[in-house]
Length: 254
Image 1 (cartoon, rainbow, N blue to C red):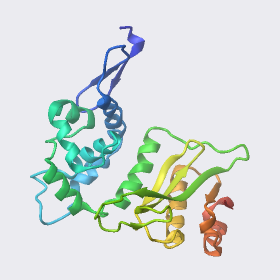
Image 2 (spheres, rainbow, N blue to C red; image 1 turned 90 degrees about the horizontal axis):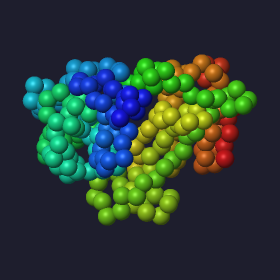
Image 3 (cartoon, helix red, strand yellow; image 1 turned 90 degrees about the vertical axis):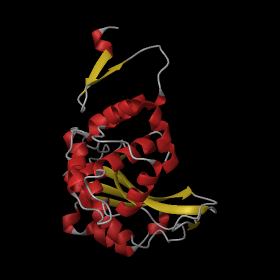
Image 4 (cartoon, one colour; image 1 turned 180 degrees about the vertical axis):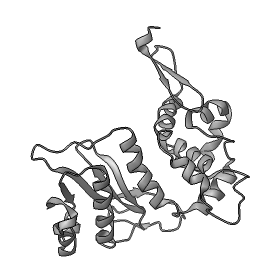
């Protein structure tokens, strides 16, 4: 193997990424995820936060809980029972993701994520921006100099689920109607909000738009091009965009 085919990632334990023709496990990419997260103090902040009085921070760290679930999400397995798949190679998953103590059991992961709820949402959004900045990522502007920001409702199918908030979406299935925002021609994730499936796309959008613009300006000082779906054709949204502090160059409803 030539040296230019080897990449060393700075994690809790040095992990070497090699290009090979051999069969590799699908989870090997988690080492890159861990390396990116390791460039911010996100996990340290999580570990210092008291999420609930029902659990001692000495028993299991918030960071280990969140890192474990992030690993599952990155593998396309957003369900708690999938954590059992990490049992086959715990040392790899701990090293790849930067888990300091232990991988939680299914029951612990479920309970802790329930305890955490949306209490970490603001911290996660802020740390997402910090992570992009730490990796020197700047969203690319269009030819006109404006940085595109796409905001839209993205219903997700949770049919036959009894989860709280699952209801009929405009797509005709039961699920959630997440509001999502992406910045730049690359489409970097900048803001997310979990919403009930039946919630109208304009409900809460003014606040979401304000929050998104604030987050975007932490990442770039260039004027923004806000692009929304036709369901958000509202004077309230336009008013937010034309405010001097918004630094929005244009506002488009498709």
